[in-house]
Image (cartoon, rainbow, N blue to C red; front, side):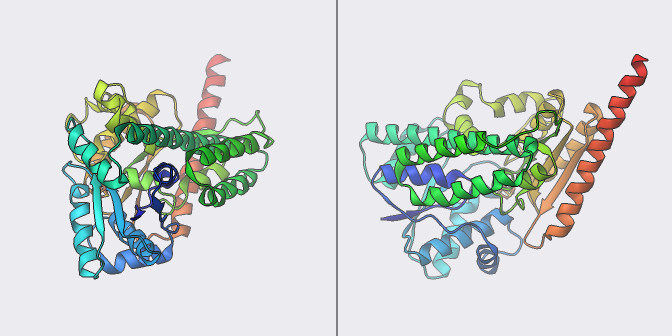
Length: 369
Ligand code: SF4
């Protein structure tokens, strides 16, 4: 079995390490690129949301490298994601690919079925081995998220923010050369140390911006045009509400105890939206409120064109922005999004936040005198 999976930000690092530890041959799709998008757009329904198009491109590029089995996460919510695996199977079948697709829906109480799927995917029914590998994968996922969060912080404070990019590029290249959890962990540790050495200017007071929205767009840098890096170079400290480790935490561990960050977001969103609207629409509203309450300077909502849950959230965010007096920028991406226009909107938003911060500082000084 040669196993592959779609790209979703940095999840490939943990999934690769975990599957390698289980003795499986892993085919990591090439990083998402113009070719990935072109392939996906060519073979997917025109009106389907962008993540499915990129997934199709990822699969084709992995199949070209010999993959015969695809792992994908599923959902049962009222949006298109619940149909992804079915549509994707049909598209690949129409293209003549004979490929096995294993879907991991969140267990939602049915752990037996969940374990059955894992057993099929990892080619072993030894529960201890599976649980150990899962736990190690979970730790890697968390460490990678922590590393990227640290790199965001470094970028905002670094004397030369491009040094961060050089080190993170080294990490992206290195991660494909190491095998299994132990080697991946060592690499993460080494990169942490290198980032720590970067010279910072602690007198900087960076703007703080929270990124919310559709999970795929929030965590996949190709789709969000590397928004974290772009904002970091503009001197912004970025925090993403949705990360792969939070998804795991919510769906497989703490969420069932009511303790995950997503649960907190549901609670925060309650005065505006009480029910599930699919995807992460409710979390988008709740997390924007949480960022406002934590004193962030602004929020950016990211969504792919035609994403239904985020369109619902977008309408509510207008009221949230007024009620909490926080600027919220909505950015919609699709296969035609141009980088120049996107950067212009980001720059304009950052300028607005800077001006606002200065004005507030000035008002505080005046009120004291
Ligand atoms: S959340 Fe939005 S982008 Fe994701 S599958 Fe649902 S409709 Fe599509």
